[in-house]
Image (cartoon, rainbow, N blue to C red; front, side):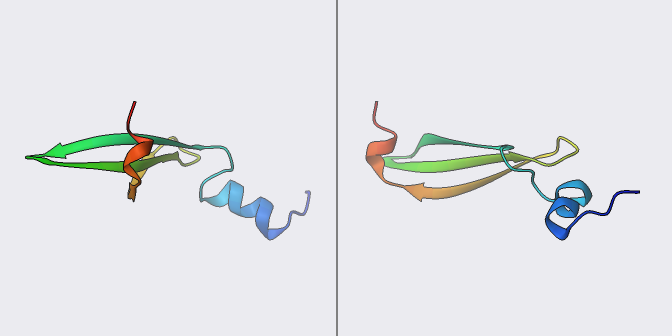
Length: 63
């Protein structure tokens, strides 16, 4: 049996493996208010998705 270090074990046991996250910008409009959000979508080793939303500068969403 091969011994592994803590960082290698974290990638196997749980957590998010490097390269499993994608970032995108989304423009939201609620009533007359516009906002730009940075959306980070991550997949764990079982393929379960999670998203986090963070306020971003408006020019990131302007096309």
